[in-house]
Image (tube, rainbow, N blue to C red; front, side):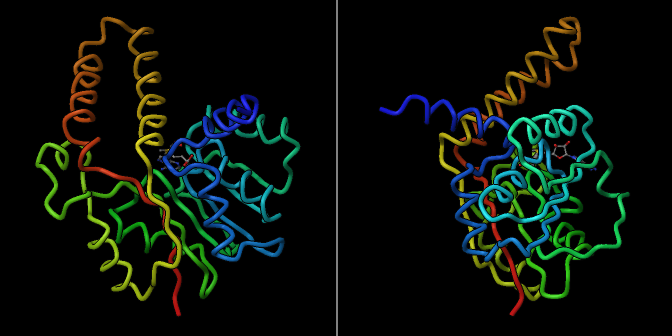
Length: 237
Ligand SMILES: C[S@@+](CC[C@H](N)C(=O)[O-])C[C@H]1O[C@@H](n2cnc3c(N)ncnc32)[C@H](O)[C@@H]1O
């Protein structure tokens, strides 16, 4: 067993906040035709890990935008440590951010602006004509998700409903990767440790404690069973 390889994969995936693992992102980038000539904008990029992976794999040039100071600072440090150039990380509110450049790929994973349909429209603003969009989002494994899940998480479309929205916008899904239970567990427990750290720092915070209880309950009662995560590439004819 190659323990070093396993440990290095764990360390790599730790910087991917959402649930599509590094090897699947490489597959998607390959299928979507990323190359040295490709410019990728990743909105809500977290640590910029997706861009780092696509830079290493295909030589793309990347710009990442995230509102979180911690993620951008840590992400820049990590890219530097790994010797990855060609990726610029910017700390900004993606909803207010503007840019003159138009990109070959515009991605957003783990956040949405105005639901699934609204997010497609939002990403289009930054894409070249015929540019491809990459969306990473939760989906419901049933057309009628439990009320508790919708109340806690907001809109959760099924893959079929997402496909209809994609088609209504004139796009086709041309690559996709869905989560495995292992990815859910990596992501959920990463969130759990962050929630717990906040609670440790402020043990008297009753509202946060109650929210944490509800968050655990929702995961074990509903999310684990009914919710999945998909990253998809969509493109026009
Ligand atoms: C679930 S994380 C996903 C991060 C990254 N896309 C990944 O897959 O590793 C959601 C990210 O959205 C960022 N975010 C939320 N609202 C934002 C906004 N208005 N502008 C920029 N970033 C935002 C958060 O800071 C967080 O990094």
